[in-house]
Length: 419
Image (cartoon, rainbow, N blue to C red; front, side):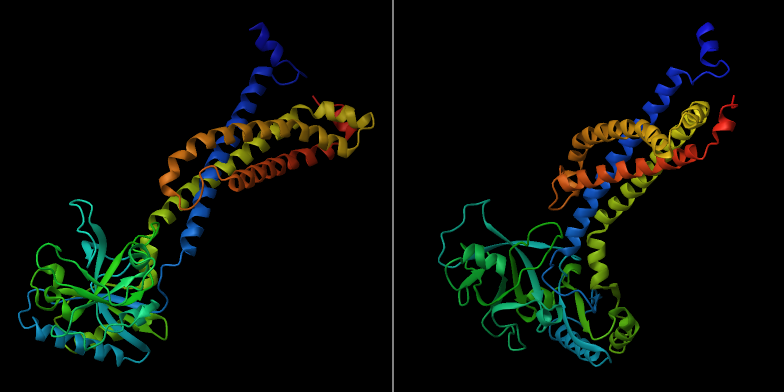
């Protein structure tokens, strides 16, 4: 009780224990804010790198939707081909539409069907170590509609039917891996078991690789003409009885949604349409996890920074109030405003530096848990760590300026009588 009375006595300075506790809390606030800000900074750099990734196609002004003929016996074989051809003609007749085509799945926004591929003349692959590829079916003009560049060869045409020699296009990734020193055009590949009378496909073109998963490198990919895939032409299973329409427009694709739907329903009002979206929206969905993580951690980091700023301001304002009498004496003895500001600032800087040091140490250990959330960004990225440390130091200094400037306005005659 005697010690407590001494700490709270009239005209005394604040208790040492209370002051230490307040300063420790400020240091902790700064450290937590710095850890969260570094996490948000790393996610921001990762998100910006993701947005800058070239998907391999132009997603602007492209409308997509899935058309299903499941359960329709009249749309099997030639009937299905007639329907799809008519739909494309009707859609291309819509004002503002430049080109339309179809594929089984969109890159980034659809499923990836994996298959094994073998190359004619190569040794038979060991069981379990076959060459893997993604399988795509496409109609003519699909690559033009997606603006996927043809590196070599030709696109599919209406002459690539079930009665003509089977052909295929491969992407640049597969071409570079399997034909590094030779021209892949004219080579033959198969998606069947090469040991059991396989169907050989002649490579007639090489197309630019596209992203199938945003943060991963492009996979091997093989494209087959729609009319040369019996499953998609006549198949009854749900996974072969729908196809994705791709519409390249001259205007904002979203504004043509209703017109394109009406063009399809003018052929058959009962055709179900699903997954109606622009390609840009589909890409946004592909990176929603990165955006959500950035938003969540960014909110917490901002709140932590505000709390740290308020904590520093509160501690400094309280200490200025407690030292009003001392400040008045110093000013009465000739201390200038600059000296008083420096006096208050010297109390803030050690707190900020201690918090930054603790925060950097904590961040170095904790951000390793974010490794799977980052894309082409090191968890110990020095630029992010340095930028956040400077930001926190600047904010801490600004938070202490208001009480320091207030202290310079003290009237020495009034403070000498302050109790």
